[in-house]
Image 1 (cartoon, rainbow, N blue to C red):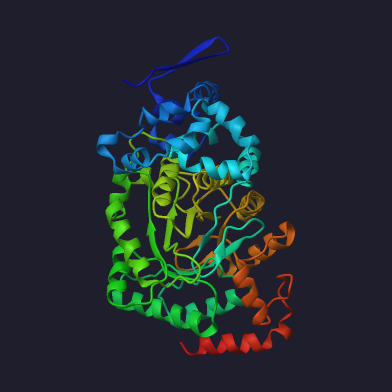
Image 2: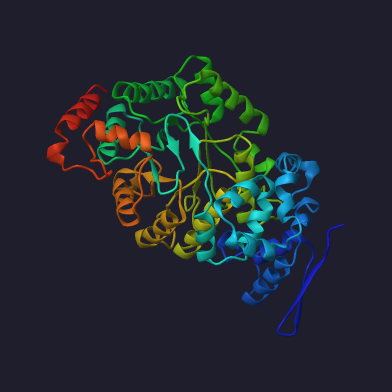
Length: 464
């Protein structure tokens, strides 16, 4: 039977019926949990829940599942793959004790303990941490992945070049690609969100991306962000697929809403691995997530949205992805109401993902009906840059004209590199230097010195 949790604050005794309620009530305020009816009713109740949570032994998360083991394959994955040996050094700790341990841990200790942490443990400790705590710990986490270049090295920040077009027009996509490459973006991936599910059209996009990367010998990877079943079909037809994309969530029911399960993800990964297209490594999966996805599908089982999000990283971890991306403000103000909530969620997501050993990037973004603006996004991307974020988005003008939301631009990446001294993936940086687009320090050369590369890139665009 689940334990009952109690704590007294200012003479008032608060009771919580199970660990799931403690977790939900301890979560920083956000609109999604209020919408679900599981948020704390006051700041006092939230603090009481946090004080309860701080005293919970970590081992209890292995015995009291927030989503029942019998009905959810994500829970079974988390429990069945838990690494008891990695957990042993912290097995005696409470959630509050884990916070103190994490703040004192170095990179080697954080790397060693990652397989022993469950997503629920990571989510729980994040609820006790200030923003600066989340940044301080995550800055010491290292998750390095490889396909045609090396991502996640300390002191580096990659960019997904996102050349979306509302009609998948190849010339429009090519123009955005050229623009991004001239700004030194694209080392994480050149990834297109297609407007269509037509296999023929999707295959055309895959071939176009492969042609550009091959012709220019760019040490990067491509991805067309369609449903995993479409990508498997393209692989079976011989298309030059680099990465397999899929949106994932933290419960079996939410993943079913995306039309996937763990077996299908395994099949897709094996299909991509069979192509042997990576030159430096075999991390072939690209996942995207977002707080609120399980709630929006009515598939959260009463679990708070941030914990559901951390469980999605448990899914990602099982498939050794090259990239995982929290699209933090994309679902809308029903789940993250304003800039303050989006900033907090972005820091939580990055912390939980990296702590679990998942390469975590962030689409620092908001929808046009949220109580947020570009100043909020400047704050979040700067904080994430300090925290060691793996990658951000590079969208022309920061305005995605296909998905109709506000993200980050090529210029934003230049700003982060300049003020924080961050570099691109080393193989991609070397390519920029060979193309005479950047100097030996990684700074872009003046346009007058880029003329040969500009002419070559324009020729690629004109051939569409």
